[in-house]
Amino acid sequence: LGADGHRVTLFAAAGSDVTLPASFLEVRTFTPSPAARSDVSMPPEAFLDAHHAYLSLLLELAGPLADSFDVIHNHSVHYLPPAMAATLRTPMLTTLHTPPTPWLESALAVPGGGSAHYAAVSRYTAATWAHAVASQITVVPNGVDLGAWPLGPGGPSLIWFGRLVPEKGAHLAIEAARRAGTSLRLAGPVSDEDYFTRHIAPRLGDGVTDLGHLPQRELAAAVGRSAATLVTPQWNEPYGLVVAESLACGTPVVAFARGGIPEVLDRGSGCLVAPDDVE
Image (tube, rainbow, N blue to C red):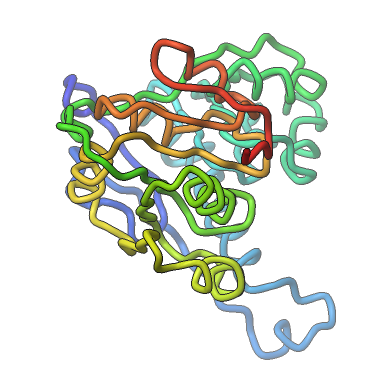
């Protein structure tokens, strides 16, 4: 949006890309007193931090910043933005990136919470939220920057990329590559140490290589030099961004037909397989 000439202001967590063509709102922090911290109802600190940050933001948007923006586009999964949307003069669009969660469902159930504007990243995700949202959910699939995921030359090896967590199913990709007699490269952050130690590390070697957590440019190059991408989730993907990123590089995809993936992948660009069907 910034590249198209819009003035964009971000409310984003620490570690976000500060080189983006945008300005940033302050994320307000809070430290409870020793007396409050000793209370038995003290919630986890991460929960309290997020609650305070979003509450501060929305009170500012209802007060001093009330006329500062034309639209608020909420991409978070926090409950306060939709719960308090009716208190703001600025219209809010919430894009739903995940399946329903209890906290977000609760926010949508309060008066005015489910009647704001909503979009979803796939028809599948829109359908999972239809029971909780009073208005129509517009489907806007995730976009991929073709400049960041350039066409590659292909190559002899398979690749799997994403977060190394149980629900992404990298261990199933390893099993499939071994049965096919094809080498496989893994790329992504280890977001679950126990899963990696128990289910990934023992399977490395013998044609299976861990590339680690690559910078985006190196990851795109690795995907472009692959014969195909394996996408093996053990949950219903709300969209399946790795599918679109791989296809942008010209690399075909073999994926479990879960969630929104069949909306991205067809017979012209890859192969859909029944969920969990490694064979």
